[in-house]
Amino acid sequence: MSISMHAASVTVFQQMLAALAGVLAKSEAHAAERKIDPAALLQARLFPDMFPLTRQVQIACDFASSVSARLAGAEVPAYEAGDQGFADLQQRIAATLAFVGSLDAARFEGSGEREILLRPGTPKERSIGGQAYLLAYGLPQFFFHVTTAYDLLRHNGVEIGKKDFMGAY
Image (cartoon, rainbow, N blue to C red; front, top):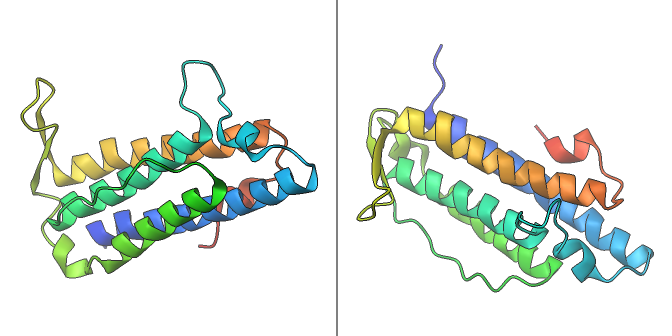
């Protein structure tokens, strides 16, 4: 039995982004209950050279959108980077979920063999097959940023666990 590229991408992105939205909601409540400035969590980093929480969420959303779009042969949506608060990040996740959810499964047919061009017109331009793009590049990148967002919040005392990270499946 084989798995479709749609199921291996969109379904995973939907589950994990919904879980990330839940983690962010718990984080906002945590900050309010403990009278913590939300910016302390939103700008938290694990190390000075790493992106803060807000950027981790943005990049996770960007990978979910761009990977899905490229596999479906659709235009990659552009989002503004002005997310400042928990509500903005929730809107970003909602927009990403709406976009990936709008991509019909039929558009993914044959995408495993489709060549995906990364960073076109730059010195880092690279062509990669669709299946390798998803499994070896897109999903690992996405999970790195979702996991880092979770870790930042857990490290800062938000009471979340594995069930929160996984979400509903």
